[in-house]
View 1: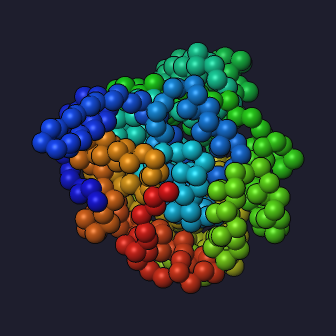
View 2: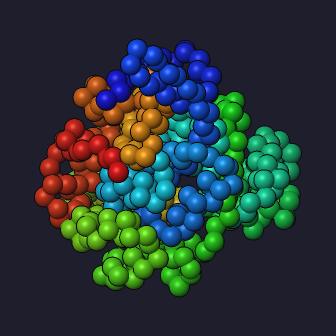
Length: 422
């Protein structure tokens, strides 16, 4: 549909909007309409009412004409297999209010927060998004920038406290929160929130990349793990589905999104325990000398391989490796990295893959293609030799083996999956 081409040195075209060209008889009428594009970096694991609120608030607060989501793939930033198929989640996003969905490749999506945020920001910036909207524990941009400035310091009381906390074996998120709180107590409660930490990484990436995107924080409306909260969190919805409470999980969803839930349930949902044999076999046979990951030092990787020999499941392995210095998410990402052999992400995206678009935004792909300088593509065949896309194919194929749906279990689905147009 749109051929991929690598133009790393090409400056971004000026954002002037859609150009409509109409041929009437022998006369050509051309009209330029300026549009504003808001970007969202998401996983939607799964998409729920809180995400729909965020999409609506994004359009209202930014005044955006179009919303483009950069969506993580088969495995999440926590290192887990996503509950729903990537393409099902892309469809949910379009039905919930997004105008287009592009791929956030696994080389960024299943990585620590810094790389996750940097990948998403680079992709949306390359697409010419005018603003970046994200959920957060606060909408106070002054507090966010104050925290960013504090956590960016390489000397002084904060840096000393961070170094001390890490030396005591505390995990990085906890060490950072406690160090910042010791210097500015007002920030301590905010720094305990995972979305606040991720928001800081978004702002840091925008600053480092000299991006023109304007950040927009939308306050979360419910706790992270409270099942009775309104709206229910993603973890609460996952729990409902695991307990076969499908109707309850669909209760607060628009009918189009609920329809996807029902279509995928139950055989199209991920069952990670189905991958246990592959995971354990792969980790036990891992060549430590040739494997590297941003989530693991050689000592941690050796610990992972050693514990795999006495573990009977992937979850048991994670628990066996876990200690106060390393979070569960970090260990899960390391396990997933070992299974997928993810390459290190490139300095900038060499392609941007379009997963789906709404029919009422027919000119949006062409506009994104123009703004990106030709990086946008929907053609998997054109990417087959790219190592980033090859890792994406491995991730999708492995994820499919963790489901009971025959179509998902077949290899090569990145080349056969139909492009989504609603």
